[in-house]
Image 1 (cartoon, helix red, strand yellow):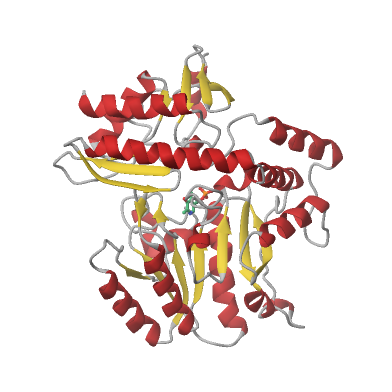
Image 2: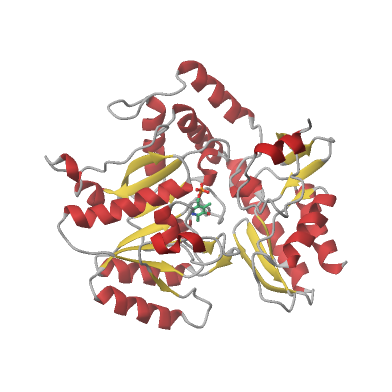
Length: 422
Ligand SMILES: *Cc1c(COP(=O)(O)O)cnc(C)c1O
C-alpha cells in the first residue's frame, strides 16, 4: 500500500475537509529553503513551513544542538527539577525582552503559551481578591485552537461548534487608518468599567486574519489605556516574534510594553514544539503565598523539554550572527521592490509590508474569505512552479526563511507576478 492510501486510511489532517480533499503533497526531505517531494521535485518554502522556520531546514548549528542535548539528557520532569538549557533559555530570552519581563513559563506550542498567559491574568486578579472577569480582544485575531485561545479569537467558521462553551470576550475593531480614535474611545469606555482583567493582541500584524497590519502608534495608545486602568496586556508574539517584523519582536517597535508575552513558532527555528509565556515580576509576585492554591497549578508532560530548549538557544545563537540580520534587511529591501512591481497591477490591492512579511489581496469582486477560489488556484499554480505558498483566502503573502538567496526570492516574486498576469 502506498503512502497516499495509508494516509487516507489513518491520518486526520489539520484544517482539512477530508471528504473533498485531494491527495496530500508528500514531502520527504527538507534542506535550506527547499522541500523535496517523493518524485524528487523541489519547492521553495515561501511561508517558512507554516510561519515557523527562521534559518532554513537542517541548519548544522541546530543539528549539533539536538545531537549534543540528546546524548547529554533527552528529557526530564520539570516540577521539582531544573536543567541547564531551560535556565539558559530563560536567562537569554529575558535579556532580549524589556527589563520588567523576567519570569518564563514553558509549554509546548503557541496555543498553550497563550492559554497560560490568559490563566495568569485570570489568576492574578483572583489571587488579589479582585473580581475582574472581562477580556478585550481585537476583531479578526487568531490566538490558537485551545479553549481559552479560541475564546479570545475571532468567532466564526473555524470554531462555530464550540462557541457555546467559550467565555465572553469584548472586541474592538481592527484599526484601518480611519477608525483609530473611535476604537480608542470605545476601549476607554470599556476599561472605565474596571471590570476588565486583560487585553490580548497580535502586535502590529494579525497573522491568520490575512497578515493585516497596523501601526505601533495605535498599539502604544491602546496599551497605555489598558495599563492606566490596571488591565494586563498580553502581546501574542507567536507569529510576529523572531525577526519576522524586521526587529526581534513587534514590541521592539513600541514605546509601551506589555505585561505578558507569548512566544512559539520561530522560537525553536521551526524545529521543535515549544512555547514560552514571559510575565512581569508584578504578575509573578501575585502568585507568591503560603497557600499552594495561589500557585499557578498548570504544567505539561513535556514542559521545558531539554532538546527543545537547546534548539531555542541555538536559534538565538544564529540571531546573534550579523549575517542573519543582514539577510533580514535584504528581504525587507526585496519586498520594497516587489511592492513597487505589484503596485503596477490592476488586480492587486492593499499591498503592505512589515519587515520580512509582504502581503496583498487579489481582487476578485467577491468577498474575501478563507475559502476564496484564489486560494486553491494560486496554491496549485505555485506548486506547479516549485513553490510552496499557502494563501489565506485571496490574500497572498510571503514570509520566507531568513537564509533565502536573492535568486530564490526572485523565483517566488516572479512566480507571483506570473500568476497575477496570466
Ligand atoms: C500560530 C499562532 C498561534 C497558535 O500557535 P500553535 O503553535 O499553532 O498552537 C497563536 N497565536 C498566533 C498569533 C499564531 O500565529
